[in-house]
Length: 439
Image (cartoon, rainbow, N blue to C red; front, side, top):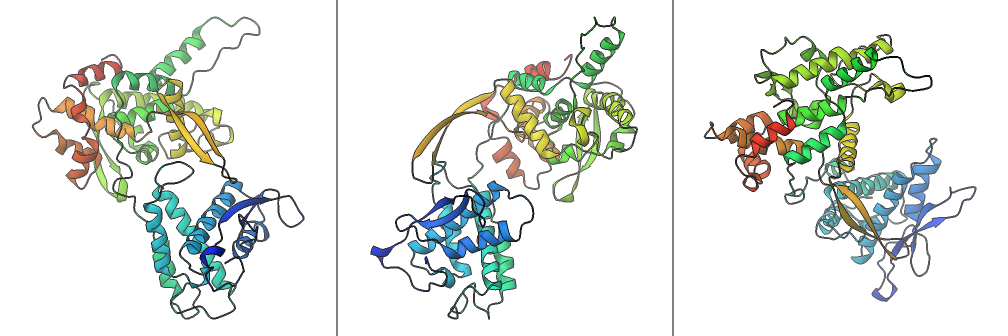
């Protein structure tokens, strides 16, 4: 397998163990270019080297993204190890062999993390291997005709096979079992770390404008943006997904009349997952805060930009975003803001990360990991809504199912409400006092 066109498996006493080495800078390869070699003999895995060179150096006029290159090398190394372990010449590999590789990864513990491989990692490796064989077919990387049904067989209907391999694997049923619910005091700290409510920001702005002129040289700090706070508040109060929050249209809220009171729910139709429409209930006070955001902070941004980019999205980037100011809020931006707020609020846990480097040396790192991710706001909404409604609604889970947009009630009960019994029935009252302003 160390040779470009090897078609015979090695004997057990002549087995190869592929590892990744890094090349010194040269006129051909950039510094630290990953090369797959045999750990003992240092024989190079030529097919992988040629593929990575053509993909990331020869045919890539842009700057190499090292993380992507390293990940691709790691994926190919694991594939060639798999082939070597099972005595399979890489030129003989078929679709069923890739399926076997996927299954093996499902049941394997990663030596880097000490945990089961995530489906995203398996899908990435499957994609890398598929792209490698597309390249190998196009370059006829074999001397002898490959066996029938191998991925390099010229007679194979590769279009159909390629389409099947391209289809991503579904997340394993037990992969994401961990569900976290944010308690009242925790949510209060995280929300505060995200920034002020729009009404609080407006009050601070007005106070700054009406205060006496600053002493010479004194700089009055500008109020922090309220965008991330109010966007997260939307998820906590409605159970909306992060993508749904970022996709809310401005016009739907700009034309709303003020609610009669801050305790009356306002029913709004949104387009959610699967392009399906559903009703979401916004408490009146939240609608008032959103309208304050539109009228004040959002308008300040548009004024500063001379109205050059009339926004379509409700939540837009603040002026501090520089050239991205006024553009729609992106999912990754809000996710990052939420995680940073968890860290600022001290809502973290210390995790031990174990990794093996290319030489096999084990290193241990301790990192502060946020206790929650943004999707936990959706779980939190489900639990708090359950306790709020159970006093008057004999089947509160049906209301929650509809608001979350679940087709199957089992999803609501078994995933989103499975932690409900961990919280006392009167907790919703304390939650409202802490989370809802002036409750």
